[in-house]
Length: 120
Length: 108
Image 1 (cartoon, each protein chain N blue to C red):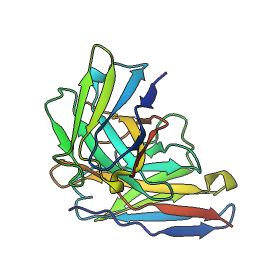
Image 2 (cartoon, rainbow over the protein chains, first blue to last red):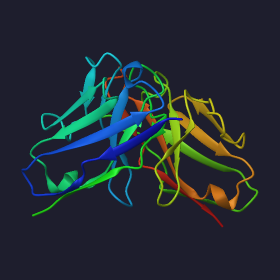
Image 3 (cartoon, rainbow over the protein chains, first blue to last red):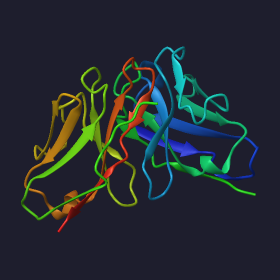
Image 4 (cartoon, rainbow over the protein chains, first blue to last red):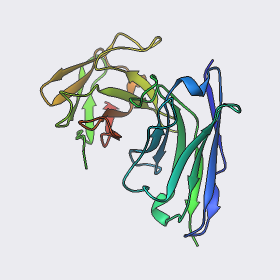
């Protein structure tokens, strides 16, 4: 059974940094593309970042490009999102998602999310 | 940046058919996907690669495409179908993924 568990969210001041983690089980993350998707409560979904199975093809939404970095540790079967220079508009529930393919296409499985709040 | 456009809301009576549209210029070139999100829950995959259903998804859910518009169709709508529905695809060259703004389905 596929399971994705996010952690690392919390309250952080503007301009500071935070790293989100996603522990995956039930599959090997090195065989699939992986993504982060965020959602402001009551609002829509926003794709944040994704990487294909090779870890060389990474992409970011314009809203986070240059500030966020996606990475993974295949040995730990975990995905990460390193977030720098956080802004109030980054406040959202962040979901870790498993793609249904090796290249970046869609979001087959979702975690339950970890809340990030950026506020002074 | 690339956008997918959905109606904010759709309302139907139980037993009727609901249709939710999603428009985007690159939809003829890229697969489309649909997700269902019930209140307080994470989204779940409903339709993948234009019209495929994951195992466990009811046959009442189907999707189709006509030009730059894709449509999610829910037949025999039930109270349990009340949720937010999001379409998703990629830009024309597959560089990034994008969601539609979401449609709230209300079962009257």
